[in-house]
Length: 100
Image (cartoon, rainbow, N blue to C red; front, side, top):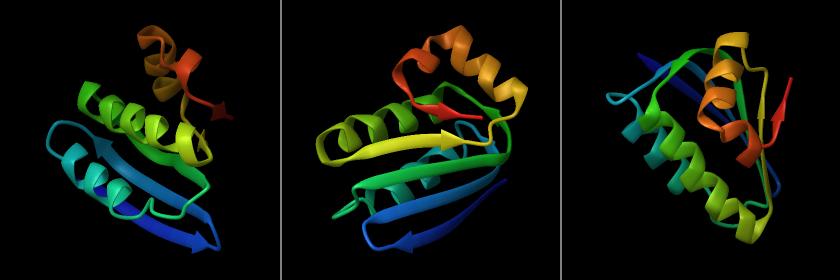
């Protein structure tokens, strides 16, 4: 189960994510991201409620990062230790901006 809450303020978009980002739910997150990035210069993911992310979820983040590299910035906030560990093991901690 995945829950996505959107907050838009000017050219900033915050996505508050809770649940699991896996093969089943990643397409939902991907659609939400792609449908809302036009004109956005600052994208933030709040992962406080995320307890698991699979390679499918990581691909969504990588895709969002590539788009935001061209039009602004992207950050991931409030990751649990488990999620940070996944980012570190996969090397995504070197690609993504992660704020604790």
